[in-house]
Length: 74
Ligand SMILES: [Zn+2]
Image 1: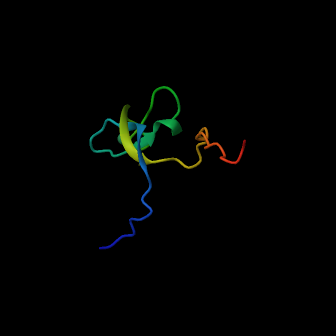
Image 2 (image 1 turned 180 degrees about the vertical axis):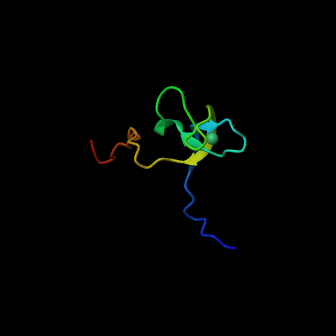
Image 3 (image 1 turned 45 degrees about the vertical axis):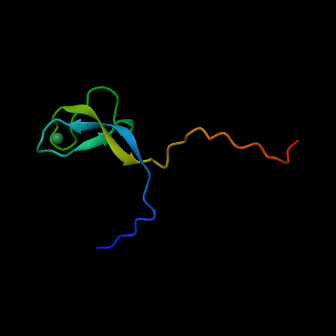
């Protein structure tokens, strides 16, 4: 099996909420979860905070990295 791995998204450690139920694999990104207590969207059970390596979210506006000063701009 050969997959195209050239365009691998960069994974970043992301805060998530994870279902406490070991049989339930549900989790949500913390940034998409509502503030306060979390209930599992699948089993409605309690969730706890965790971390997971996920691809960076594209629609999040980040402060632009500092640009190199133009060498011709005296
Ligand atoms: Zn669950």
